[in-house]
Image 1: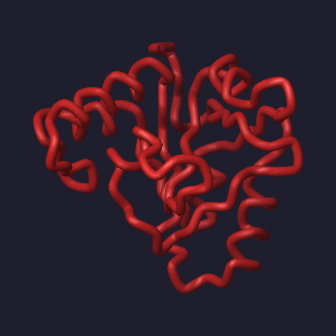
Image 2: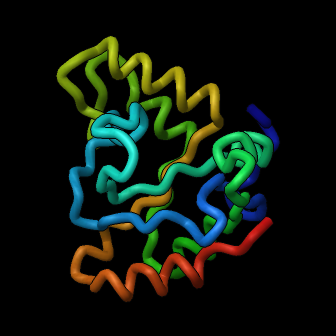
Length: 148
């Protein structure tokens, strides 16, 4: 974890498909613990995109066949995309969780917290776009990210 990461100027990175960033589903289940623990597996619908302040983490998740994508928090916010920073996530992921990280199992909350810390995870939150069409969300993603 880099203690010098700055929300106002430093990019967030995401490892994803070569063809583009996975599209969030703004009206999907918004449990942060469910998202971080990847419950329901690959292809699950989620209103969040996991990001990292560490580029090497994104490269790890991109794998050999993917790409590393980046954006800035200020760019996301300008498009009504929320940002849940790592410090906020760590604060919510205690006990049985708080707010959108509330969960029935404290052990799973603790595991999610460990992952957030390990991967320097942040979330981009697309719930404000619930009334957007699938095509509008796809366009938003295309505008928001660039290849690293």
